[in-house]
Amino acid sequence: MWRAISMKIITLLIFVLLITVLPASCISAVKNEPFIHREWLLISYNGISRHDITSKPARVDLSQKSDGKTQHGNAEIGCSQLNFNYHFRADGNIRFRSVSHTKTECSNNSQEDKLIKSLSESRKFTLTGHYLLLTDGSGHQIKFIAADWD
Image (tube, rainbow, N blue to C red; front, top):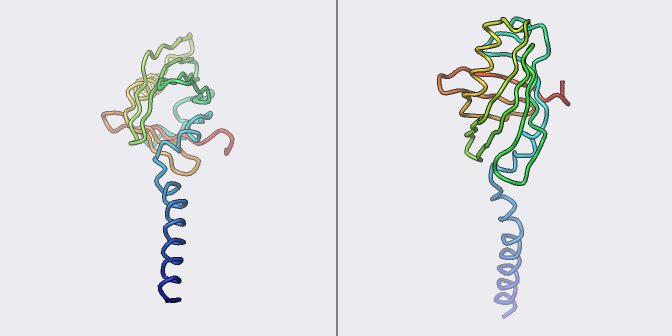
């Protein structure tokens, strides 16, 4: 009789433990969302160092959160200032929309132009530690490091 009661208690404890622990382990990749909402500094584009692309600042600011699915961001790539909307999903897809940018006289840099085009056409993102990797449909990759980590 005591054995049957002990088994019921053990079964009940295991059930309670599973009920409390299991939901925490089912958190989706959207939990990466807070980590994407920050400022990112360019490290490289297709393996080319930022310093070989531009001597000026190169950053993407995704720190502005909104309540909807579409987020707003801005960037500074060399002499160009960009504004855009973006939307990302837990499966690693990202879309940049309404990308507009200003060009100044000093922005006669074909590498900067390629980088801006690749950024606006990015389709995939990967977060690894403090690094963000964006990949466009042609396979061009843009690598960033979190500004608060650099």
